Length: 139
Image 1: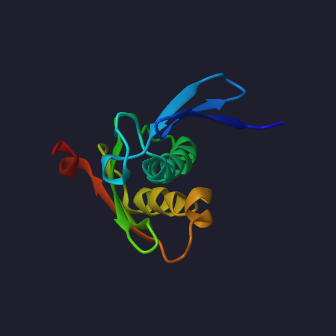
Image 2 (image 1 turned 90 degrees about the vertical axis):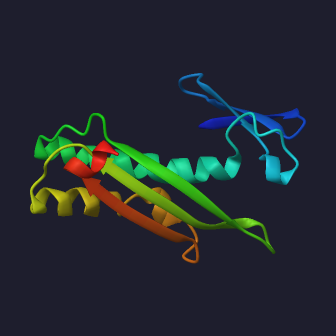
């Protein structure tokens, strides 16, 4: 059985349904590629999937460490290339509000880097990942 179902709605827009839950997500082609940019673009979803996946693995590690990551965020920037049009870099800045030991930081960061989405991306796609802790998060 399918996990996702995508319907083309016309005008460079799609509707994705998560079959199990029925939740829906809309996509648009971005403004710089003939679209309206009213919804997330498919390539933005790739970047978001990487950040979400990394956070999920960090969350699993945090549960084992009895660390609460609530309030943490990741700011993501996707960089596009041309000829052919593709994602060439994803920049991820993780902001974790707690004070963590060096050991806990290593475990959390290591968990993030085991993300299956990241492991599935082409090796030429540069992943630039930075972690910010404690006081740095107040930005």
